[in-house]
Amino acid sequence: MCPTYDAMRMRHYGPRGRINLILDLMGGSNGAPSPDSMGRRVVDGIFTCLHCGACDTQCPAGIKISDVILSFKALVLSQRFKGRGSK
Ligand code: SF4
Image (cartoon, rainbow, N blue to C red; front, side, top):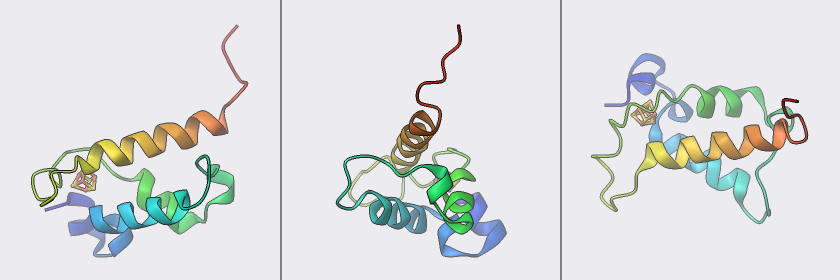
């Protein structure tokens, strides 16, 4: 079982809720939204994923859900900090 869903008992803290949020946020756009434009509930739901992989063995389609969530976080953060490199 997803440990964050087990602790919070709210859909957006579980794998299905996180994937649905990501699908909603990515729908029809060419890029991920910035964290600033995402509601607190969305940010908390997606960014509290622990990437433990417990959900990966439960997906009947064989989707690596934790990888999808990690990739989405990376995309959002890369947009958030675009242009800020170390010099
Ligand atoms: S990797 Fe899956 S099981 Fe683990 S915290 Fe994230 S959504 Fe929950």
